[in-house]
Image 1 (tube, rainbow, N blue to C red):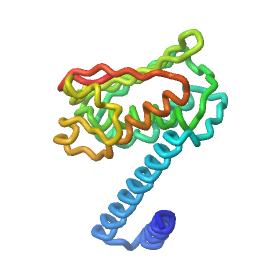
Image 2 (cartoon, one colour):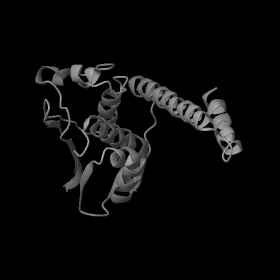
Image 3 (tube, one colour):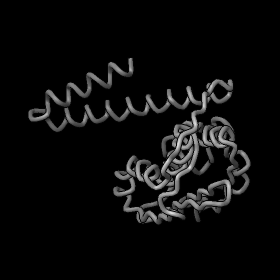
Length: 203
């Protein structure tokens, strides 16, 4: 059903491209945006199910990290530009190639960058870097946004949990993102840590 909605919405947009009214353009945009939200939600539930049941078939491939991160940043370029966020990026070393599951790595980094973008205030800064360490890579994504209350950090990776200030911030979220991130990181044999100060930012 979602595929049919997306396809027909795209057809409507093409058909009405030159003649749609301002109101029609607004309606189509709302349909497209919410359809994409539903696709993301379904994908989250599917990912959780596969990771929890142990049925996710990891596929290790060579990944050029600089190019890979370019693609992820491009997904959020519109929101980053809209909020005038400064993206402080560091690839160390540049063009590093790693062996990893592309889907799991994408889930991890895109969710973390999405959160940083979502909870960083306008004109804020996001730091995104990776650093090669012997047989592993350390990724750091830090923002200077709303942060997380200290008493709630231990619950952050719990399924469906959302920090109280995230709820009051009125940003969209299911509480599944960081849970999926943790499961994906563990599936790749990695670890994830968080430090945060409320109203100062999160790393």
